[in-house]
Image 1 (tube, rainbow, N blue to C red):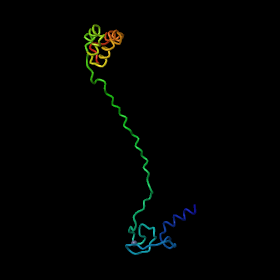
Image 2: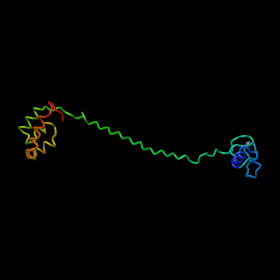
Image 3: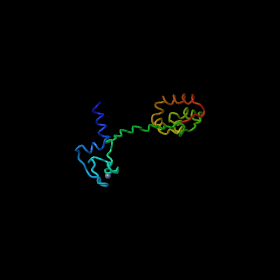
Length: 141
Ligand SMILES: [Zn+2]
């Protein structure tokens, strides 16, 4: 404790610092003998040195991890089209083997698949007929 108090006193008492055999320089404004590490002249009070940075480096550790997770998946309601249930059902019933109802729904890819596989061996044909019957009129694809 005593040691600390002494240090504080030393800092406050600038004359004491000067008297102590420290390296000195001359103020470029008034020519007074001042400590070599003095920033402000002890005699005229002008700034003789660039202010030293009090803190060596403030490391801004601010890694911005704020990735914008904004998956705006809003595909519902887009590109949806009303399909007449009974038209689709009749097409499925009569030409479902060739995927006619799939073409009608606008699902050309599936239509071609049905066309090539015969409604996936007739299984999907039957299933689709039932599925279409359970759908509201009109239904949306
Ligand atoms: Zn000075």
